[in-house]
Length: 114
Image (cartoon, rainbow, N blue to C red; front, side):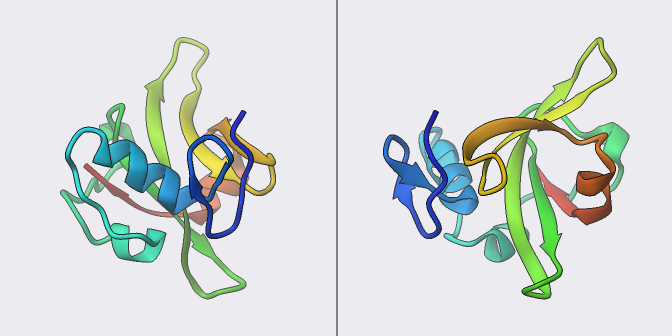
């Protein structure tokens, strides 16, 4: 239910995607940089979609800004065939889940890190 806020850093009142990932990983003592573009260079690179595991970080290309501009956390492959992830999304108006099988997300996915 946390709303999306550009540049937001508050898990209760408003947060953007990279702060969401940064803060959740910080709770398990994993320090990540502030922006999605910077975070995308930290950790073990995941080469294949099939190799994703729950907790892996996903990074998406932002055509308008011509760089990595969005991130989320992979939740896993589910019996319904879904490949779900959680993120703070301006489109969804806050923290929500989406299915990586959606062509929109697959076309924008450019990196995954563990």
